[in-house]
Length: 193
Image (tube, rainbow, N blue to C red; front, side, top):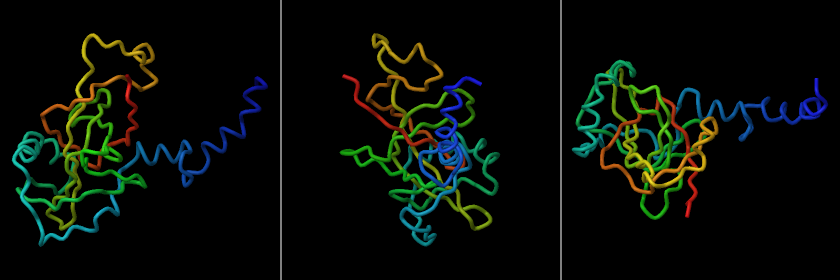
């Protein structure tokens, strides 16, 4: 075994061994790629305080309701939900975008029914819907970041496995639904001027 690999053994072991330490490989796999377990945020849903779902969000739910019904046992489409400002999922806080700051409101997700690349989006709403078994499913209503203009050269384009890319700073009008049971990833954005 090459000497450089032998010397890196302790560093790799520290980065991979303990899933309870933030920033380790196992922690990141559990946080970002494992099952999503919501907690915290604005408290448990009070089903007496259900509110109507905005029409465009309800329309997005309707368009993916068949796929969601297959993926989420006991879920049925309703016109009302319990809304939250934030939610913790496996230790990461996700929040509704409030305009001035996008902190915790930018994610990467895989669209329902697609097996392709992850896409960036901003969280518009976080809500829970009751199930037939009196539990709940949590959802994000998001707007995707639009692709960068055709004339923009993406310096990351040559490195597909790296996972970074250039996106526009404008959002699509279309609302998409992201069940919290699927993979969602906290995003880091940097302006590229």
